[in-house]
Length: 544
Ligand code: GLN
Image (cartoon, rainbow, N blue to C red; front, side, top):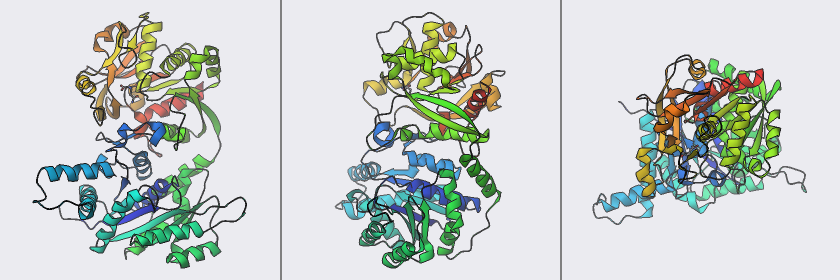
């Protein structure tokens, strides 16, 4: 294939973290894609972890699973949703991956006896990875978000990698997302920290071409002028990006200021026109702003007590999937967090679940809070509350059914209690070795797996086809030995793996809407194309 000239858009952050760089970058990508360009995104994370899979959600937010089985940073999920593109796992580059590769090559004598040094060998490996991402996807535009904040010690080598790429003639622009605080005591927006972050960028040999000004309020002309003059950036390249009610409005705000057009112009090209998808997006953004009838959805989880990350970060794809389904049905989602431990301490609180139009048990790991979740599932089953179980949610729903409907009192999962006589959820055979060897990184059943849906079931009707793919991330499964014993008294295995061995979907025939899946359907939901299970849940919630 002839090599395409990739145009690079490098996004850096200034002043503070958690600015929404990913949303800004994703929104720009969405606009370029709506203009008919092929766009992809790369996220660089300057941590030593090889991937996000070994980090607790309360530490780093959700682990986003890609179709090809990557356990990646939650920003990859943002990119998939904004770009409506599947992003491969090698588009999430970490310091750990880069060093691991360089050291492996050094051990294999691949450096011809040279002294292998941080400079140039680390930036060269970063460049090789970026180049590969561009070549594999043949994208017109590759957006590269460099995680962290300018001035952090950790991202210097990545800045060095992109700086020298540009020096060698790669078409590349830099967009710096920075913050303008409005201190309460000053009562006005301050641009000095942003000016300093632009200087810090300069100190790394990089001049910003665009500045995206994040703040509570829109940035005024006076401050635009200051950023322009002190930051050495054209005034019309200073783009205002104030807080908005809905993230789906960000592309519209950026478009109003012609950010996407100016970016194309920066590469000495004239932009193609915005396609029909732009009006679809506008309609979606309007729905995300407008009220409409409320549906109250309870998410029963446990990753709530957090350091830097909020609980929304732990379950971000689940939240977004609920929103997509709600907007598709013209309703306003009211999402509430329920800590399952509450039901262990005070079972009488289960009565409170009556208030909800639907309940979700998302993925999870370990023992904490599982008994509370199982009681909540029992309540949803008995009180006919629409229910969706995701991964652990399926496993716990099977345990609940075994214990309370089939009367296998000791039913449990090997993850929770190895000593149980009835492990209705057991470790996947190929996972036993991994657990014994403490091989925890990137070793679960990960990524896309096919499921064959049983005709006539609700699951089949929602997907509308027999063979479907969803993404997975788990070590345990429904124990095949119990399949016959369990599939009665209302429980239906509505989707199995192609060879018929693994249970991928369950539903209840004695309930208005009770579905669970071993997969994570939240990862395939897109703003204009909600996942069928979430869509079904919202429709059922509306009927309740
Ligand atoms: N802990 C369960 C397993 O490993 C479920 C994982 C999940 O919910 N992602 O199988």
